[in-house]
Image (cartoon, rainbow, N blue to C red; front, side, top):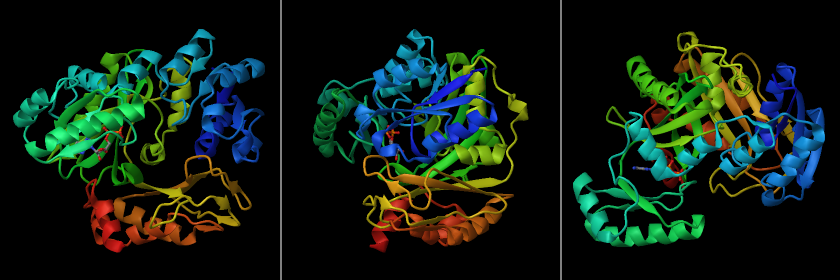
Amino acid sequence: MFQKILIANRGEIALRVLRACKELGIQTVVVHSTADADAMHVRLADESVCIGPPPSRDSYLNIHQIVAACEITGADAVHPGYGFLSENAKFADILAAHNITFIGPSGDHIRIMGDKIEAKRTAKRLGIPVVPGSDGAVSDEKEAKRIAAEIGYPVIIKASAGGGGRGMKVALTEADLEIALQTARTEAGAAFGDDAVYIEKYLQKPRHIEVQVFGDGFGRGVHFGERDCSLQRRHQKVWEEANSPALNAEERSRIGGICAKAIADLGYSGAGTIEFLYENGEFYFIEMNTRLQVEHPVTEAITGIDLVHEQIRVASGGGLSVKQEDIKFNGHAIECRINAEDPRTFTPSPGTITHFHTPGGLGIRVDSGVYSGYKIPPYYDSLIGKLIVHGRNRVECMMRLRRALDEFVVDGIKTTLPLFRDLVGNADIANGDYDIHWLEKYLAKEE
Ligand code: ADP
């Protein structure tokens, strides 16, 4: 087991990882920018190293400073959290070259999944169902037209190097294709320095369903069921549930089994998430994330397994603490992402939190690094906390969520809490009847 882990992140996830390290009796080092000197994880860590000024590129993305911090403090492993360097293959390689363990998969696996064309090709080879489309990058309009006619309109053009929903364009008919292809290419080139694009069938009313997987480092793979993250705004997840209200146990075990086998065949090590669009009973792979996800706590709530403990165990060579047959799904969980944003316009609302009171009681978990008097710096993501609620079934979970949202107090800044108070009373949400476009339509109606 590791002696000392360096946490290369900030905010709620840095605290989340720190808690897991403490429970395992592992010493912790955190790195932080000058803007985060007062953060809770910095106060609670055994050691902290200031690695630079507020902009992420000078601090949380500064590989040299982070490696130097490992060497100064004698850390033997790095947990990257999510975002920042968590899916940076070069970072994983550099750490390996310094004999520091990256708590995550190999640089090569990160590289494959970071290239969307390569990821899709790999998924297909491993027996994972993918969205029908081009078998790689499309070179010209003629080829695009031929493929689109084959798979049928509407189609979506996506950037190979894409991320964060950028570089995607929908063509409803052949008349839209030329312009969609050109704009997607231009956007991709500008955003990612790579204008390779591919084409796939555009699914009209899918749900976003993702499977939590783990490779144990010894060639075995397991799945921890799925999460439904269909409630999104601008491709950003807002509310996540486990299990999905749309799946039954047979579908869960079928798609979970396919994913676990793929992970084993790939020789993957650590936590991963295989993301699908789901429509009319069919799953279509869109991408794989090679890291811990923001929404991992809903899976923890229904399985009772600490996924960060498992990541640390696997990275240290100790394997998983559970086998597939030990992973049981118990009840229902929902996570609300609480952002420091206006609940209608979603414009960021940094500033000082004058009062912060979190709900409690059975089945309630709040993951947050903020406190009364905390000043939210304007430089980073606006997520300030996550409310995770567990119940014996979805109805109990929703009742408890409504109560917890009533208790939650965040004063001094605007947050997305009022949005969740509306959603929890909505009939479609109560029925679990929503797709990936539901939230944007709902918000447009409310305006
Ligand atoms: P990114 O890495 O940029 O987030 P993804 O491939 O994960 O890109 O897609 C992001 C979102 O775009 C999906 O959650 C979905 O809402 C939409 N999307 C992607 N591919 C399709 C498709 N083939 N049909 C319909 N919607 C899609």
